[in-house]
Length: 288
Image (tube, rainbow, N blue to C red; front, side, top):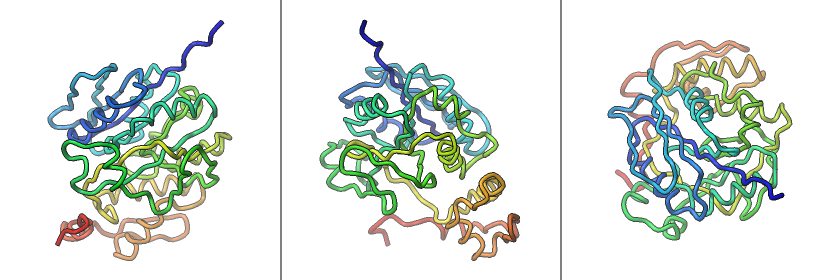
């Protein structure tokens, strides 16, 4: 008797980036292997997110509330999914044509937490008509996370797990309890998930060859606008794992006199000014 085909759900969460979402869906439309469904969780976008028809079912769920409830939104998407396999894509990602097929094959071969390669695009890339070969010629890889040209390699550093494009079996996600919703808002919830996966014995694999393109958006370094979320979530992570996450950001906050750290304690000393937040915005390459 033939085994039943394993099904794939693609999950994404979004707040207001409807143009980026449209390109994510366009990437899935070009896939060599369509997902069995796309689940979108709209984190109180204004106006609400809508999506055009596609050659696969699309379900849009609404999660109202302030801020960016990243952990809760991803868990909501996973609860709504029907697939045996879950592929989480950040809304800024355009999946390559071969990504869904490669992830499906990889999860058939490995019971693991799999991160797909991400290539970063410039400001004007993929803003209109685009071809994958052109994007590949312009996109840049991540400076720290090294992916194989093809196939997979096991990554021992759970801190390098990232949530831009990752997949695992739905049962494994359920066994792990999903993302910890004690992490409220922005920062730390994905690193905690990677650490809990390692503690549960789930290998972290970096998959090369087929990945996704990351569409450009404004970046703040450090992300001063998320100071309170990062401080709260970093304190929770420290209490659980005995190390500080997001150390680059915390160091920058400390240097600017925004926070103070003593042992396991961290305190907000002042809020960043609007001017400081403005100056933290990184200019696109080539801008004055």
